[in-house]
Image 1 (tube, rainbow, N blue to C red):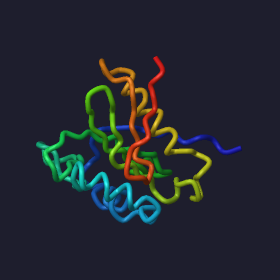
Image 2 (cartoon, rainbow, N blue to C red):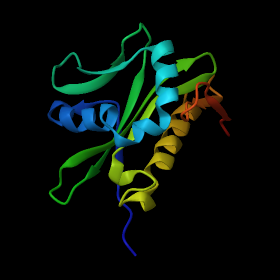
Image 3 (cartoon, rainbow, N blue to C red):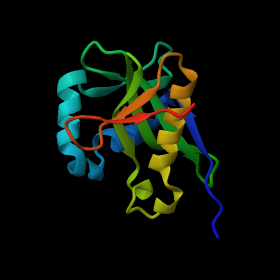
Length: 157
């Protein structure tokens, strides 16, 4: 049996990973399956953009409307010891909920990819749920799963 990969989560990504992050977020072959959800989120919250942070050394995600968002980038160490980006969740807070606006994984880690057994999307959602548990006043995660309205999931404490 293959050993599970160690994924790392971070709110920013080194600038040299811009191309890989763009591929995952904007040129993902899985987008067609969820285009109605992407359109609904974009109309409400704005289109995602990759931008350098204040230091100019790290990437973060913003949206085109005046909405504060946070990002969880997911990386995995390659055999060469390099942390390669493989996923991202862009989310915001509204009242008592964290709302996952954009979620994407590298095609190799999708449900039909060569690393599907890693269940990366589930791990990403568990990480977001862990964040929600630590934020005072948040008791729900809302996910846009390809539709025009989010699905709500209550957080267990």
